[in-house]
Image (tube, rainbow, N blue to C red):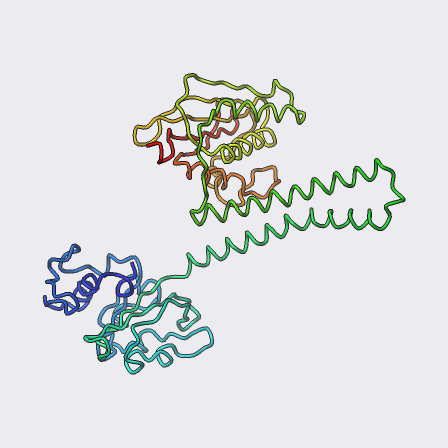
Length: 389
C-alpha cells in the first residue's frame, strides 16, 4: 500500500496521526472527522507491508516503521529525530545525493512528489523509493514529506525471470535456425550435386526445424497473453471425450502402439463450453509428456467432477506407469522452465497448460498415479458465453 502516493487523503491523514501521535482534527482536504474514516481514527504504520518514513516541516524524521528499518538496515532509534538527509543518505545510480537533487522543501511549489526509483544507501544497499510532498495549500510550503520504501528482491526476481526467458529462447532458436541456414545454403550452392532423396531429406529437416521455431514463437505469445491477462477464449460446446480420442488416434498414427493407451469415459458428462483449440493444446501437452517421459500404459479418464462454488464440471486425468515426479519437484511443475529428469523442450509447456486451464476458470493438479507414475488432472467447470446466460 503506497501510503501518501495514491491512497485517499483521509487514510493518509490517519496514518500521519498514528506516526506523530497527533490529536484529532478535521482533514483540510475533505472536512470530515478522521474518526469517521472506514479505517478508523488511525492506521498503525507497523501494519504497512512497505517501509514508511515521514519527515515534518523542519525536515526531521517523525515516523520510521519497522519495515523501513528492515529494508534500510537503519535502526529506528537512529533515524527518529534526525534530519531526513542524515537518516536516509540516499544517492542515485550516478552517485548524486538524492535529497540535494530533489530538494523537497525548497523546490518548485507545484511539485507533489517523486515517482518510484532505484536508489542506493551507504554500502550499496538498493531500495525502491517514492515520495509525496504534503502541503497545507496547493502551492504552500511543504508540511510533511512521506517516503515509501520497498526492497528490490521482487524486482530482481522478475528481472532474473526475464533474463532466463531470453537466454532460453536464444538457446532454443539457435539450433533450428543454424540447421535451416546450413541446409538451405548447401542446397542453393550445390543443388545439382544431390540426389532427389538427399534433397528431400534436407528439406524435411528444414521443415521440421522451422516447425520448432514456429512452436516456440507460439509458446512465447501464449506466455505474454497469460501474464498480461489477455488470453482470449472462443468458447463453444466441447466434447472432451471426443477430443481425447482424437489425440490418441493422432499419437497412434505417429507410431505409438494402440495398446499403449487406455481411455475411460464416465457418462453422462456435463456440458462444457470451452475453447477447442486451447483445450487441444492442454491435451496435446499432457499426452505427449506422458508418452515421452512416462512408461507403460497411459491412462486417460474423462469423468464428471465437482468444481468450485458447487458447480459441476468435467475432469480429465492423464496418468502413466513411469517413475513419476519427485515429491520435492511437484511444487515447481507448473513454473516456467521446469523440466523433468529427461531434458527436452523449453520447459514452458506446463506453465502454459496451467494458464489456459485457469483462464477457463478451472484447476489443474499433479500427483502420483495408481501405477506409480505422474498423474495430471484438470477440471473445466460448466460454463457458457454471457450472451446465453
